[in-house]
Amino acid sequence: MAAQRVAVFEIKNYMVIWRQLEEREFAGVMARIRGLVRCNGVGADDQESYRLDVYFLSQDSDMPDPQVDIANRRGAIFMPIDDLFAFVDILRNESPIFGHLRGDFPQWTSVTTTNEPVGVGDEDHRVGD
Figure 1 (cartoon, rainbow, N blue to C red):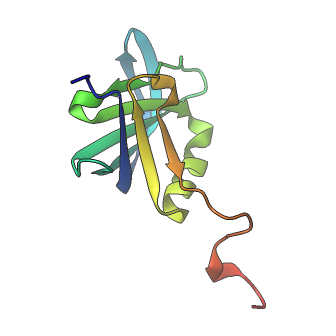
Figure 2: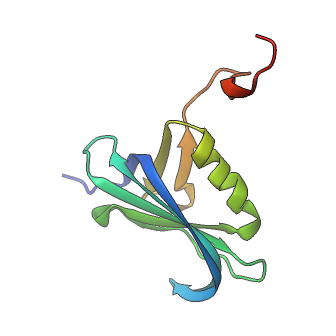
């Protein structure tokens, strides 16, 4: 049987970690980490635990390539620190949300929502219905 190259999991929990500055090497690239959002969830096909760490880097940091370890159900992607609030907003306001670990194309490792109809928004804030 061929090795699994893609894993999809539903994100059930997340944790935001702010850092003054942490320097850490990823595959030979030194990253300057300011924030981390750890996304944990359950596999869509196997009900196993999965984790995707989204590192938010300082503006002067080099950007490592995504890290994917399908066998251990882990991954990491890297974004500029300026994207942290938009990312957390999606986690807070959308459901369901899925993590995609892509061993075949690591640069496609991602966090996604499902398809939604155009115009669907937060029902709690609509006026005049």
